[in-house]
Length: 444
Image (tube, rainbow, N blue to C red; front, side, top):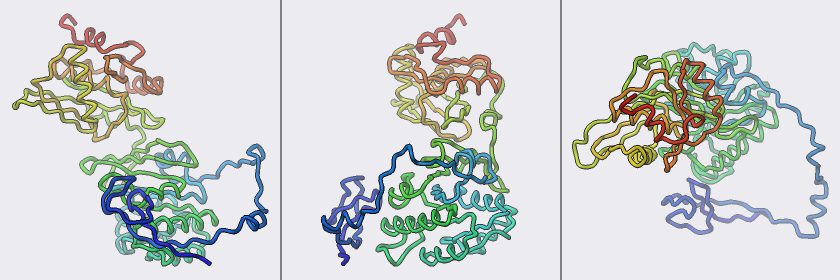
């Protein structure tokens, strides 16, 4: 006989407790524990256990025969790059992103690219009229696209099993799907976890590729339990700034390919367009002449080098405390680099407001851009421009040393490909003082 028991599950991190508490001990969020009823089966006795599981067999890893997964293209070079070469039959993909970032748009365009395959679109948030309107705007032929307006996961899966010739299943979104077998409202831990598990079982059993759309909270995480990411094969994030046209598709987890890969798209009237040469696009509006406070750097996103222009503006402080503002760059890291320049190069930023911007609206998190930020800071403070064919990358330490960064050869090749002749890197310079003396001394 199955026994029912009550537990309290945190809706943010899926922490479980036998009693209600106001603050989750795991993620420290308040009022996130929700009561749920779970059923447990009586475990077999020690005597019966060996008989019940006697058919289990231990297999050597060397005896396992590996067959390379068969893939099919999404029709987007950038999308295939992120997936590791294309979709895999039976693959379950979670695509997350902020509202309005373009998740439904790019999936509708995927339906256009896969026009020779049957696609089942589960509408949990939109009605068919809205999807039809978007498809017409994107010039998508909807002959291969079938709609299901349903939020009950069992009814959805019954339709899937009646249409086994479906190549791609899209569920929009996971936070609207529910099941009568699980407690809680739509989007709760129990509902999302149970429904995703059911969808994954059917997808793998019938080799149907499934894309599940998930919302992102204001904290930047997937809404619902974090365990959702463990139940799927691939986790994709679609990111971007609403004030800019670029959208970045990142892979956080991928059981069928590499992680940390990115695909770049540009939003337009006709939907999302691939950007096959992002470095050239990001530098296309850069002034070719010598510009004060500007320096180009090479950043690695996964295995892909990207080039950005770092812009710095310095002004006289109007109040007693100087401002430090950064867009696309970590403000705390900016404070640290300014301190290093004041200590090692004897520069004075105490009466100067500093504004740093990564042109194009891209957000850079790696330390390889430190050297370019430092050179742009010095250029803006000294009012002396760097030559337009200079490019810099490298991590700057607290002692002023310039440290090596990953995949330096790829960075150099990308810079040379775009015509940069002077590449400042840790291979040539070991500390920021030496580089400062060469580039910004009064004699040069």
